Image (cartoon, rainbow, N blue to C red; front, side, top):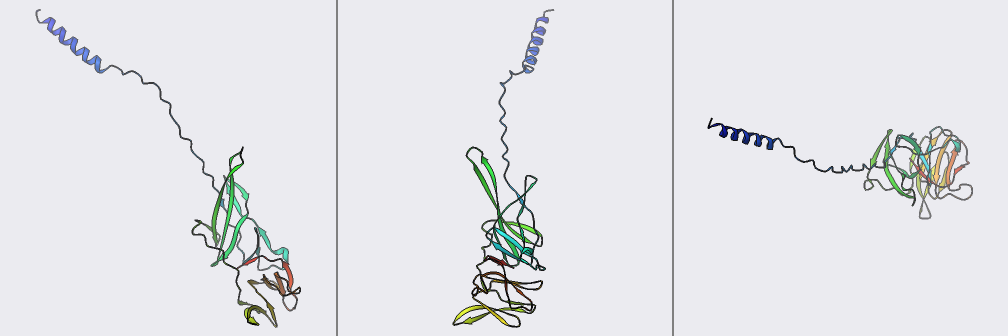
Length: 231
């Protein structure tokens, strides 16, 4: 009976230790969880368009020249088709030209940033189209638009060459006879004749612009005023 008090002391000590280990720590005050706002990046996709044997451009207006064109209205004007947030819209070509057999163009889209101030974000795509596929380029790798130069070559019974007049170069379009121009920078054979573009014509009978030279005739019919011809 004399050892009982010591046993009670030991049991009491063990229980106190266990109690200390099982003691639940005080709850910490609730912290505010900050959720980062996910910024939706403005972007768009440029859809491929029909490729033509040649193109005629006046400012932002781009027209395809089909091989079976017969009259000016057969030139088909088109706009770039864009996909923005799964919706389709039509854009405007900022630049458009052909180089190394590929169509190069730029198109921009405007996204509102602040409705009160009218501030917008402008995103420009630098594109190349070849065989129905569009490639996106960086601004640094996007080629420069070529300068207008004298076109030469033969198509069907037509020949475009460079000649000389009083020491100055001229362009000569020939078939069964020759037509002289200060410059021809593009041409394509279409149904019924030859379509040529001359930024510098030859008097009122051969005005500058896009001209159609019908087969078997010595007339040239004006189709469009001066622009840029691309092939």
